[in-house]
Length: 420
Image (cartoon, rainbow, N blue to C red):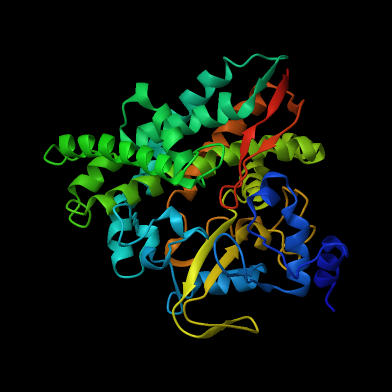
C-alpha cells in the first residue's frame, strides 16, 4: 500500500460506512461532514456507486487522476443538457420537452460548445484583464476603507458579495442600481427546490423567467447598436448566439452569472477562513508577499468553490478499474480530488509554498475549463494586496454558516473582526 493511500485510510475513519452512502446529500456539505467520506472513498472505493438517491443512481469519482481522465474524455462522457447537464440534479436544466429547458455552452458538446464559448471569451482575454485591474482595485480600496475596524460584521454580505456583484454588473453592463438582482438570480440558479433559497420548483422557474425577461430587454436594446465590450452585447451581436432561442440565451446568462459570482465570492470568503485556520501561513505571506499568487492557487485548491461536475456515459467504458455503462450518471467530485494525498501532500492543510498548487482541479480540465479563472484570481490578488497594506489580520469571531449545497461550496455568513 502506498504512503498516500495509508494517509487516506487514516483520514477516512473506520466508523464511516460506504455501503449505503449518498455522498451528494447537501447536508453533508452544509454541516462540513463530507471530507472524511471522500477520504474513505478514495482509499477503498474510488469509483463509488449509489443505487438510490433523490437524483437517481450515480457513480462518484473521488481520486484526482480519475477525475482528470474523465473530465478530458469528451468521446465517452457528455455534458449535454439533453442528458441532464453538468450537475447531479437533472431538474436544474429542466426537461427537454417542457416549457423550461435551459441549455448553455457548458451543457453542450462539440462542436456547438466552442462557437458559443468563443462569443464571450474575449472579455477575459489577457488584454481585457489588464483593463479591468484598475477598476477592481479602485472598488476594492473604496469598500475596504468603509469597513468597521475592531467591530464585528459579516464578511460574506459586506465584502464578498458586494465586490463580486459590482464586477458582474460591469461584465454585463447591467444597471448598477439593480445589481443585487444578479446575486439573487445566481443563488436561485443553483438552489434546489425546498431549500432556504426557493420553496418550490415553480418559484425557482418563475424567478429565472424574470431574469430572462430583464436580459431580453437589454439584448433588444443592444443588438443593433455599436459594438461594445460587455457580455450582453457580445451575445446579442455574435453570429453564434444572436438568434439563439430563449432557452439557450437564458442558459448562457445563468452560466455567466454563476461563474462570475458564486465561485469568486465564496473563494473570497474561504481565503479569510483559510488564513484564520492557518495563521502561520498568513505570517509567512506577510514575510514574503511574492508568494501571493501561489497562495491564491492554494486557497482555490483547498476551498474548491464548485464541489462537483457531472457527466453522462456515452459508451460502455471504464473509470480506473471500474466498468460503467452507457447512460450512467457520473459525478466528478472536484472537492475530493483537491484533497487527494496522491497528488497533494498534507492535502487538508494550507501550504502557500506548495509547488503544485496550480495543478488544482477547481477549474476543471479540457474544453470546459473555467472561462473566468484568471479574472477570479485577479480579484483575489487585488483584495489581499489591499488587505495587507491596511490591517494586521482578520479574525473569525463567531459561527461560520455554510451553504447547504452539493454544488456550490460556499458560505452564507462569516462574522469577522478586523485587527488594525
